[in-house]
Image (cartoon, rainbow, N blue to C red; front, side, top):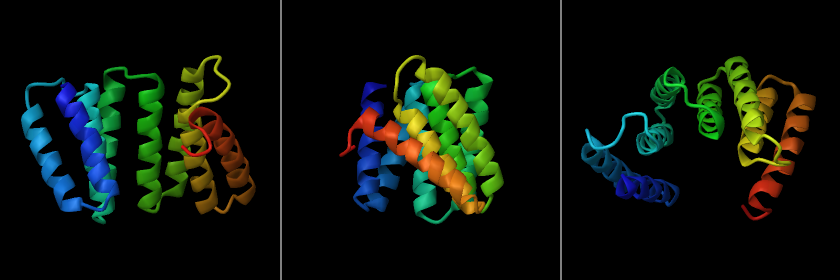
Length: 169
C-alpha cells in the first residue's frame, strides 16, 4: 500500500510535467497492482481514483472525470468518510461540475466542501482545505456572475492558503 501511495504521487508529478502517456501507463499499472491488495475506499485507492479523474480532465473528457469524482464521493459518503479528505473530494467534485458547465451545482458542492472543511478545522485559525473550498466557491460565484461573492471568497481563500501552506505553497 505504501508503494502504491508513492505511485500516486509519482503519477501526479508526471501529469504536472506534461507526460500524460507515462502518467496513464503508471496509473494503469498501479490500479492493476492494487487489485485486491488495498481497501477499495482506503486512502491509496481514493488517491488513485482522483488522479484518474484529473487525467481524464486533462484529456478533455470532462463528463467522464465528473462521473469518476461523483462516483467516488457517493462511495466515501456511504462509508462515512469525514473531515479534510471529504472536503477535498467535495472541492474536486465542485471543480468537475464547474468544468462541465454547471456553476449552480458547483457552488452548492463548494459550500458543502466549505462546511465540512470548517468543521474539520476545529480551533485552528487557518486550513488549506478551507482555503481550497473557498477558492472553489470563488470560481463558482464568478461563473454565476456574483463578482462580490467571488472576490469575498477569493480573499478569504488566500488568507487561509497563505497561512496554511505559506506564500510560496
